Length: 80
Image 1 (tube, rainbow, N blue to C red):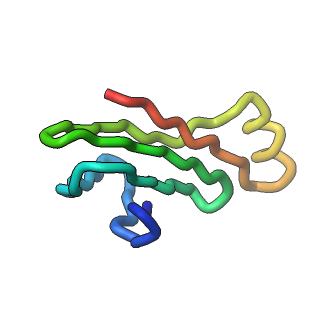
Image 2: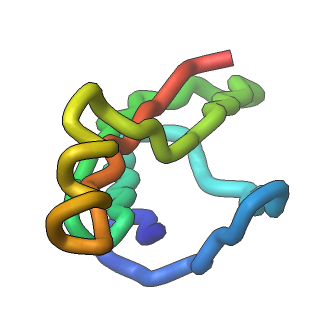
């Protein structure tokens, strides 16, 4: 996970990160090695942004697991 180009965290299951940032435009980049997501924030003074991030298996997970032993996970980002 990076904020405005600066790496700020590597999150594992159940972990969270919190950061105070100045008001204005910011870019958050998330990835699970295979899938990348970008969130653009435009925060006003005193505004709070909170997101929930998760890996989700797609429909083709079982065939991939059976053949290759690994399967792609999609990155889900939900604003709270």
